[in-house]
Image (cartoon, rainbow, N blue to C red; front, side):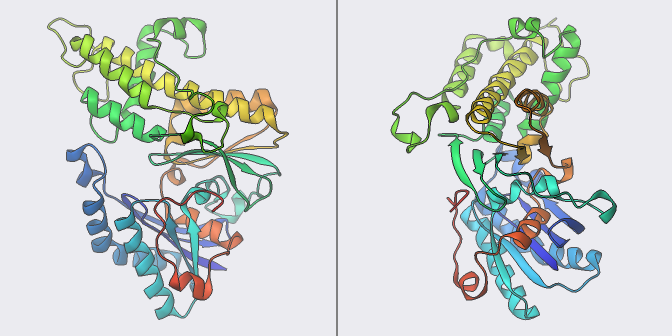
Amino acid sequence: MNILGIETSCDETACAVVRDGFEVLSNVVYTQIPLHRPYGGVVPEIASRAHIEKISEVAETAIREANCAIDAIAVTYGAGLSPALIVGLNYAKGLALSLGVPLICVNHIEAHLHTPFLVDSPAEGPLPPPPAPALGLAISGGHTNWIDMPEYGRYEIIGQTLDDAAGEAFDKASKLLGLGYPGGPKVDKIAARYAAAKGLDPNGADWTKSLIAFPKGRPRDGVAALSGLSASLCVSFSGLKTSLLRYVQQHPEVTLPASGAEMLPESPVDGVTMEMARVVASYQEAIVQSVAERTRTALSRRGYKALVLGGGVSLNSRIRTVLSVAAKRAGVPLLMAKPKYCGDNGAMIAGLAYFKRTITGDEAMKIDVHPSLEAGD
């Protein structure tokens, strides 16, 4: 079965054709990063206008490259930015009607956890779904969720961020420090080059001693925002961001390099001093260790047989390293997507749709977008 997946939840106009849930026949992504860079973040109105301008071209290219008949259309209906979601959902409805094929509506967060199972040719697999039960971690610019997967296709959030997602926290820090947008990749590279310049092993005790002790963001038990979830499996990045702001205010040399300041060698951003790099590395480590701590706690509470990682922030090299160690110590495999499938893409939508078709037919044609959709809804 060949399914065309359409994804427009944020700032990527993406379409892909996937055969039988695993084999990616085409994967086309138009990124809007240059459009949003001047604003330091995604502007919903700009995103939706760009989706309108590009979606037909992206979908036609994906169908042409796949060179096969399309048996169904899958589309993200949530979570995401409402103006952006509307473009993709309406286009998908019209295309499904014109082709005379079923429409399948897919949960964006759940689709991220399908990405480790996407392959580019039959020779690679297909990989089987993870052994049940599995722990899923969807970590991106809009979501940070720990998800219980008792069987493939069933999802229940057991922990989450109470405010900003990890990716958003990276972007806001990058904007504050003048590193530009998107911030996540730049923060990752600066932190890695700081460790190399100092000759420090990020997995050693000397690494921790060299960093600023930013807060790890564990909420208090009983906080209303937990909505019944365990505080030990939830995280808040608001205090971390405030700590960074206060540190920068007290140390203006961090963002304004003084004459003769020691510069970070081979920096991905001009004007990064060693002190700024230390701040960046410390901030990233606070996020990474917050995520790792909740993951270790979740893994210890149930006999999981796999840790499934998905979302754009799963590209972060430090997160991958630390979670690999956590999974190994828990005695479970860490399943991660190829880098090209970590960010938002149509392949994850089409892939999951093959296995989970709970919203299809007349219901799919009548459904509206759901910007605040959660995994398991």
